[in-house]
Length: 403
Ligand code: HEM
Image (cartoon, rainbow, N blue to C red; front, side):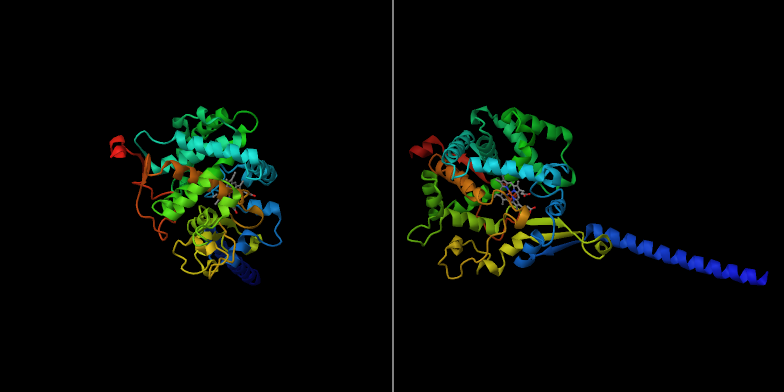
């Protein structure tokens, strides 16, 4: 009897030790797990950022799965093709084909794109005054949809265009990403795009337009802000508007002392990459995940202001891209990402955006229309979605024109 009681005691002590240990470890796992959910690690050096974006020994499928939604740039919904390994490749192939159809190598396609850029710029010039950001957003959206899908610019109602651009802006804006778009808003956007594009390509058109629109309107706006009031940049874009060829795009000016249009766009992309940060889910085995951050962030904006891009990194100096510059840039920009998931438009988008800038510079020429804004500072405007309050495109009044 006595012996029996002693054994019971030992048993219950062992049991309580197990219970306490289990409770301790459960608590530890919950705490670690909870902190893991929010933990991120940000990388700011070129080599590590490249390694995060182009990891070794990782399958393509796993790479696609590591994309984070909501992302700054893509994917209207969590079920978008760009996040789904079974649909990703065909989606990207279709986007590549659309881009190829209007590339400068396709003479007729590029000529058509140039005409679209002219017509769409004309369409949105104000009868008195228009908000600069809204103007650039409408022009960029229309050039993309008319250029990629052969839509007649005359069929686009400015009110419908404004509805779609405003809704896309709300989607991309970081604060409103906490409250995703309502299904009814998505449907209303899709309905308009289907009406314009028609046919088989309509269902995925909006998903293709989003990354193009989202990056290109901001690159256009910032480039215009730099070019405004700088005669050399202004002239370079006017030359390109008159003669939109690859040769003109790449030509340095005034006996190689002034930047080419390509160099100007590259410098804007360096200082103001539309996608500042690219997030990836960590790829550690389950048990290791507790000890590592859940997300790795590639801070493109920080790398672009690091010494691999030369000196005087906070200053706008497009000549740093001249091959004979005393400290020439020795690394490709990371504005289009790196590795297997990098941008399909990396070759095309700089010249296409330069064309939009050139056509706006050509029309908003200080004679018929003026651009009124503030002084643009390279240290500001990390988030180029905002900061355009007070910027307008204004029609010059007749009397003032005559005097
Ligand atoms: C200035 C213009 C642009 C910039 C700065 C830009 C930037 C980027 C970046 C950083 C990525 C990689 C994201 C990641 O690693 O997760 C990307 C991917 C992508 N971009 Fe762009 N982009 C631009 C224009 C365009 C245009 C015009 C299109 C045309 C449809 C486009 C379509 C795509 C697509 C489809 C991907 C995904 C590629 C894949 O998953 O394999 N982008 N872009």
